[in-house]
Length: 334
Image (tube, rainbow, N blue to C red; front, side, top):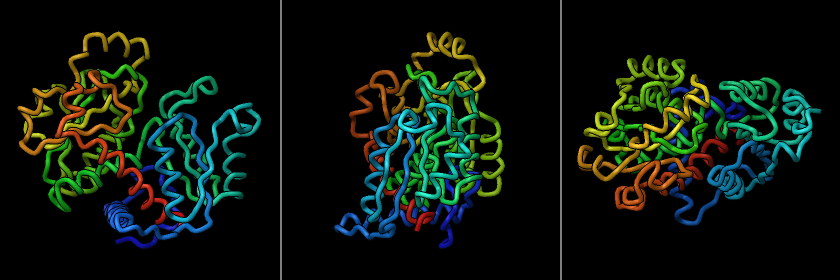
């Protein structure tokens, strides 16, 4: 267990070792168990987390605010139009310097900024790196255009909770591209799942139609790490191949990072069959469950029968955002 994470940024899972990840999971489960018996240890008493949401979220905002309340601290919410950023007066460097002199931690969600910045793929992650370079306090990535580390830590927590401390590493986890109407959705979940799978020795299959390729810097790194840990990362382009013998059918839509918006929209017209249906569970393992990070489009990402059925654990997955984020905040801001 790594007991010395204080002051570290949580921006990229590339920077976190197997021991680091296991520590976050262990602390998350400990805090979840303590909450179950009414304990809310004030590990961050009187500390303040600034939350800059350049793109709205239900689970991310509520989970972080609740986490800080449970830990005895306070969370402040900001949107770009409420700050000098939106006017073009303050640079990201200025913002990092100033906020880090007021706050004990900075959380930022920077997928895209409608009506403010037209970000190209990778620019959001670059901005977070700029913040970390000029901040005196830990910066937490609450989703950018390349990574979504908080969500994936909650996902792995949910898998371990469902299949056992080591058992989840032996299960086939299939991340399946679905033909969501949210064509510009980021690629952070499959990217970070590849990294985590590689670190922890998980068995992950990522399925998507030809052309919706992920960033090789994440997939290649995940595969390299998997060779060391005993894990596997498989890329397939057939949904039936992906679900065969899988214990997890994880529906996740994303926009192709290396394809134009127009081409992306054009290709989706013939890909509406890329969704999770009950028939896919006939090919999956007997213990198969359905996961989705939400927000979810019923009968688009997956049929309502699957989403609301007994195999769905997406609300457990959503709840674990709270516990995983409490662990992350406690370890780096404590």
